[in-house]
Amino acid sequence: MKVESITLHRVGMPLVRPFETSFGRETERVVLLVHLVTDVGEGWGECVAGKTPGYSSEYVEGCAHVIEHHLAPLLFRAPHVRAADLERLFAPVVGHRMAKAALEAAVLDAELRASGISFAHYLGAVRTEVDCGVSVGISPSIDELLTEVQGYVDAGYRRIKLKIKPGWDFEPVRRVRDLLGPDAALQVDANTAYTREDIAHLSRLDDSGLLLIEQPFDEEDIASHVVLAQAIETPVCLDESIVSVGVAIDAIDRGATSIVNIKPGRVGGYLPAVAIHDACRARGIPVWCGGMLETGIGRAMNVALAALPGFTLPGDTSASDRYYAEDLTEPFVLDDGRLAVPTGPGSGVTVRTELVREWGLQPPVLLTER
Ligand code: SMG
Ligand code: MG
Image (cartoon, rainbow, N blue to C red; front, side, top):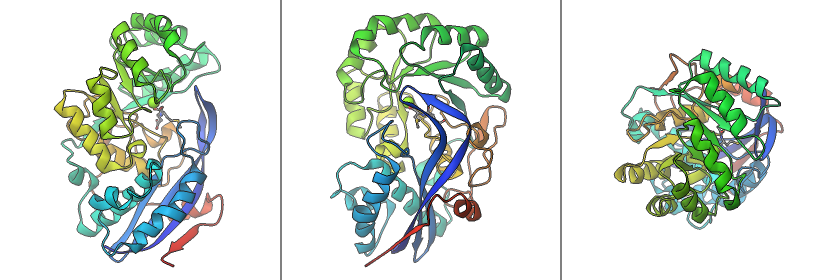
C-alpha cells in the first residue's frame, strides 16, 4: 500500500486514580496517536511512550519529533509499504522503538483492515480470550493498598502485580500475600529501583511465594540480574532490558531471566514482539504481555498478542476501567478475569474520533509527502 498522510494526535486521558511507580506518579496519561491514511484504507496506532523519559529514554515529544522528521519521510518515500518490511525500511533510524512501533501498529491496522484479517489471526493467536492480571501502583499507605487490591480481586483479576521500591517492598508484599492467601498469583515490579548491593535484601522476598520479580536493576545491567537469579528462588523476569530478540536470547542464555515480559512498544512493534515470543517458546521460557496504560487502541492489539501460545502467564492486560472512565474505543470489560480477543478486521475496535478531538491537547499535526 501507499501511505498518503499521517496525522499525529496528542490526547490527554485522565486516570481514574493516580498511578505511582518507583520512577514517578501520574494522574493523567498523555497519549500520542498516529492515524494513517493509505490508498487501501486507514489505520490507527498508539505510541506507548510516556510524557517524560521516566520509564525509558523515549517520551511523547521525542517520538512525535522522530516520526515527523525521520520515520514519516521514509514511509512516504516507499512506493509499497508492508508491515513485514518496516524493520528494514526504518533501519536508517537507530533505536526509537516506541515511535517505530506506533507506526508499525497503524500500518498493520490499515493492511489487515483492507484484507479483512484480525490482528489475532495474523499474529498467530490460539485463544479467543486471555487471562488478565492487574498492576497496582505504590500506595500512600498499606491500608489503602489492601483496599485497592481487594477491589481488583473482587473484579476477578487472575493475578496481582505490586510495584515496589526501596522502603516499599517486603511489608506491603507480605500484607498483600496475607490478604490473598498462599495460592493466589502475586508478582512484583521494581522498574530498576535497586542495585546489585540490594541482592541480600531482595532475597527476603522469597518468603512471599512470588511468581516473579520484574526488572530490579538498570536496563543495561544484565550481569547483576544473572547474579540475582543465582541468589534467589523467586524467578527473575526482565522488562526494560529486553529491547530486541537478540537481547532476549542473550539474557536467557546468560541466565538473567527465566520469564520474559513482552511489550510491543518497547521492542519496536508487534512483529518483533512475535519474534521474541517465538525465541522464548523455542527455549521453554514463558512470556506474558506487559502494559503501558494503553487506551483501547493499543489494548486491542495487546490482547490479540497475548492470545499466542507462549503467553502462558496472565498479562498486564487489564480492563479499560482499570485506568479510564471512558476509553477511546468500545471498552474492554473483564469477564471472569478474562478479556475477549477482538475478532474484527485489523485491531477490531472503532476509534471514537470525537473523543480524540475533544481530548486533544493541541491541534492535530498532518504530515504528507513534501
Ligand atoms: O498497562 O497496566 C498497565 C501498566 C502496567 O505496570 C505496568 N507497566 O514496568 O511494567 C511496567 C509498567 C510501566 C508503565 S509506567 C508508565
Ligand atoms: Mg515492568
